[in-house]
Amino acid sequence: MGSKLLVPVRRSPQEMSTIEARIPPADDRPRDRADVRSVRVGDREFVIVGTAHISRESADLVREVIESERPDLVCIELDEGRYHALSQPQRFESLDLREILRHRQLATLIMNLTLSAYQKQLGMKLGVMPGTELLEAAETARELGIPVSLVDRDVRVTLRRAWRAMPWWQKFTLFSSLLASAFEQPTLDEEELRELRDQDVVTRLMSELGEAFPSLKSVLIDERDEYLSHKTLETEGERVVVVVGAGHVDGMRRAIEANQRVDVEPLEVIPPASRLWKMAGWGIPVLILGMIGWIGYRQGLAAAGENLLFWVLANGVPSMIGAIVAGAHPATIVTAFAAAPLTSLTPVIGVGYVTAFVQTYFRPPLVRELQRVASDMTSPRTWWSNRLLRVFLVFILTTIGSLIGTWVGGIEIFTNLF
Image (tube, rainbow, N blue to C red; front, side):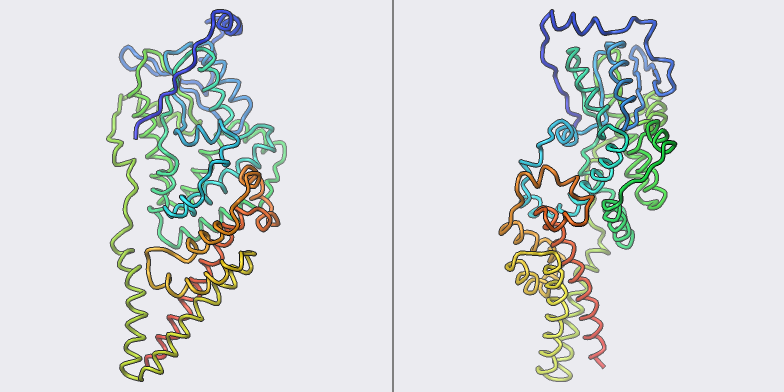
């Protein structure tokens, strides 16, 4: 999984003369600013521009640096997926939700959209959308005929590595916090707004997550510093402008100055679930079925049947209620009741994915709902009117219902052993 190289279109001489007329003279280059660092490695020079991901001033600075430096290459803290997500506002029109469900990536999509929704709210406060300065870097390079290299790791890999690194109780806490943040309307005074304009908001958010969840720090911060530096050093060109969040500047400057190369292959692999987690996943179903079998052996088939029926109702009813609360299609509600007792006995797939797939089949999201999903996430009411968000609700609420049923049913069966 290498960095993506974007080759610019060729400009006519007339267009180039118009663009060059805007470029400041060499003695006006913004090299002396605190957020612009120059690093030499042999005969190569790297000009690192630290930006705030929600800042008009950063976008202007990026354009100014690229126009004044006229580098051989521009490296940007983006992967191909994020680049297309930022540069194509109508990107959700091509969202294949069924494919996402088949690959069990719905939870990752919800987390990604929740982060985007929170950033978008901050961006509205600041008058500029997240990632504007990164797009500005790509656009300026394209205008000047300079190639662009996207040097960040695939965001899906980053999110999934971070998810795998967390214990289950931290996953639940993080997921709850992210959902709560989606409904919050950021209230910022002028001083806080000025502070945000001078910061890399994404890095600040990642740093705060790293403090609250220490297991995330190495994935969200340290690994990406190593990855970005390595990919930047692997590029070609004597003079390279590197556009990254301000929080990456110091770490990248040290790594590039030391010409530090790392093996990025392990950083691009999503680690498998731990053997202990797999054993627990299969251990619970085996334990439940074993207890029902033991009850049947000691107390008779009628007692075993009663406990099995309790298991079905304990799982099916809460999941069905979750689907009803989510405003699911009738077929989804029936599926929630029927699937929960079975999916609770296998770690291969959860009831949330089954019900989300059925909901998507019967009530697929409309194009206009996909386009406005990030803004709709900020209002609790629209979760029931936007079909994509309703799929999320079905996934979340039926999963919660099944978890409740598993604990209630398991405890009841356990007590009936004696």
